[in-house]
Image (cartoon, rainbow, N blue to C red; front, top):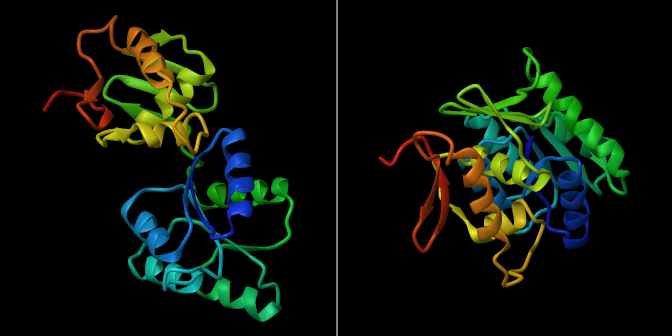
Length: 227
């Protein structure tokens, strides 16, 4: 799943992001309400974990009310130190799907988020990502292109999943370091280049048309053609 965390507490954010990524999810983070609203409104997420008290001029309630006003029905779990009954009721009435108070156990947070995504999709959660003739199965961790099995190492699978979830978009080095390697700094190594090269050997080289493209001075893009 692709999950957005909107949380201004650095320690809480790092703890939650680490847990989500270790559980196999893609996690994006905004540390204030304004950036959180921009990401939530402009990109697609399977779930949002949202703090109530946020800097940036947009608190959690206002952020969610704005999203719902735009008919954005992404499941939202409030994660807040505001634990009174009235606080929880206000969060749910604003459009929240669930409310978890701090301090919390990560296992419960993860279970609640996964339950929300199951509940929000009557046909069940999406388990496959497809771009052109490339198919990635999130349950079996299998990859096929043009019906042929592609064997990937775990890090290669995670890299391909990230590129496919951002298909048609430029993916920068920073995005890959944070989303695939969990680095919040540049280690000044060629780890990305090496893994992209290996991925191309398996996903592109045996087939007629490439899907993974280099965007000069920017990063990479997975798309079906050169147009």
